[in-house]
Length: 160
Figure 1: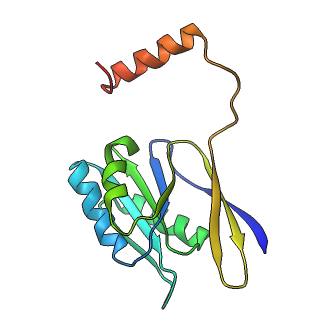
Figure 2: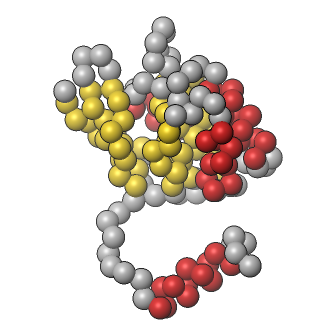
């Protein structure tokens, strides 16, 4: 077995959701979950098929984001992994619907941070062991940091 890391490339204004599912139907069901959660969401999604032709399957409504999801999934080449790149929404807006898709087994991360995916590679294929989401912690928040966090959540409409 060999350990491999893949850095996912993404634009600054995008969020990414990385997960694992179990069936080719995932592509259409994730598409429907996204548009039913946030009608104006811009997204591209891709899925690594893990049997038969083992293709990267894709869907979405934004050509650039579809291509990013396709190239990210091809770089991962990990059985039944899926990638979703979104704009004009946050993961918190769509995660509940994604988790309710019957084929979805797990979510590895949902983030706007830089992402590195840690994979195990064997003669059979690849599997995701985990992710590095963002950077290391630098300390504990102060009272000013708490006030700034609370202000941000209210400015962007997530708290009253």
